[in-house]
Length: 42
Image (tube, rainbow, N blue to C red; front, top):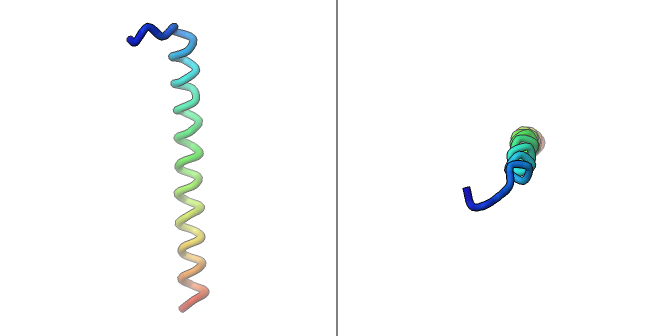
């Protein structure tokens, strides 16, 4: 590694794991909003 300690690496991995759920949630929310906009405008 780049000289990072194991605890720092674990923190980064845990953070990336949480960010994945935020990203998926944001993608779903964006799709729902786009769907509702299309339904409303057509």
